Length: 344
Image (cartoon, rainbow, N blue to C red; front, side, top):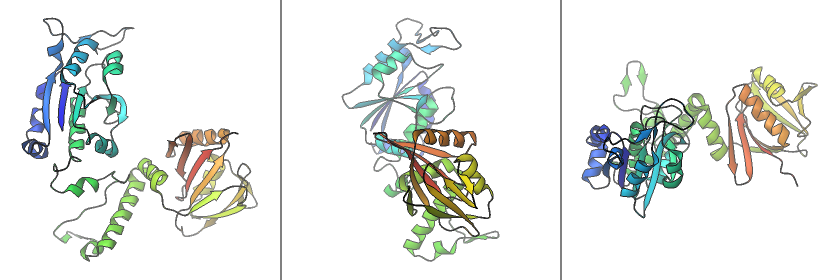
């Protein structure tokens, strides 16, 4: 893969590319980098590439002409142009895999208050962000993207399966890892990892990854459930008059269904007139989570989203074509997947 980096500070990138994996990838001719100084494409002797923004405001904006000329100087028929910007789509492992299939990347690094919108509309294929925060310049974001993408290029890593087993590849955080010695202080290595049973090891690692993701990144956990959840599905409709859910000894579960979902309490049962189903919460030891699928009116769908957001309860909204799904978990871990009814 050939990567062109367009920035105001080409020397910013020298150190990282001369060490470790990226250095070896260049020596193997798997990756090549070229640094392009945007100032070389300015029109005046002062090499000025920025100006004050129309409409006023602080800071400076990169002018469209130098940026367009710089991109044009390196563009090929197989080029894919990426602008590193806080306004872009957040970089994910899936996006890194997609970019690793490209043969030529042009990375435009943002500086100051950004780049003139017109050149972005004309020259850039997509905007990518590495997170919801702002950096002093886009160079660091470009380094993160390059390092992440390089892992998926065949031959860059010593073990091809390593990148595929990293965190986020299945929508989950990574499982715990252990090495020698077998004892460290009062802590040992889990027995399942010492038994040599590969099937049990794989199951243990998957369970630990799910457990950690649920605890540390509930947002990722809900996305994982929305895309790959394997719990028993129960489709709620008027034909299912009653459903029982285990709730442990947590009183917040009943409050969740009353206050957030608007269930009505009737004779120790929670009733949802908009679904036609009664809910029985069974106290005691929790059983496996239940996966509840339901269609509701658009007004109820919007109300649930609003209440979940106000209560700062994690939820995930995804779309597939014309279908929209809301995914969330109650305090007992039971998962709901809700879609608005389609009229007509």
